[in-house]
Length: 82
Image (cartoon, rainbow, N blue to C red; front, top):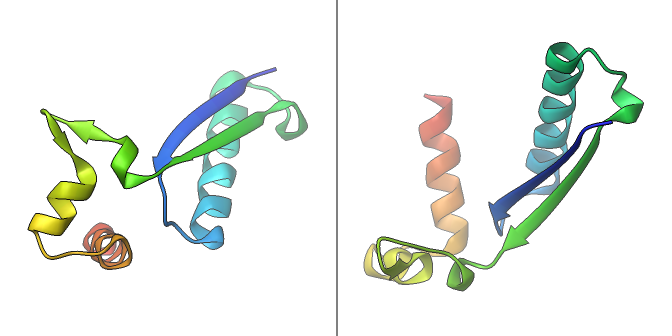
């Protein structure tokens, strides 16, 4: 029975989180040859001020780039669809 813990940055829509949970479940079923009802997904959302990389808080990176959390996700969604 796989239990998958995934940490994501806050701000994604319910639809995106629903699709992510479905994709993780589908992949687990295919690769691990288990039933969907045996797959558990735990999503943990982190505020941007709780995440940093290379010594810099993600929230500060957004601010310096003139972005809000919402505009960041809109930009990333658009980028990933092209």
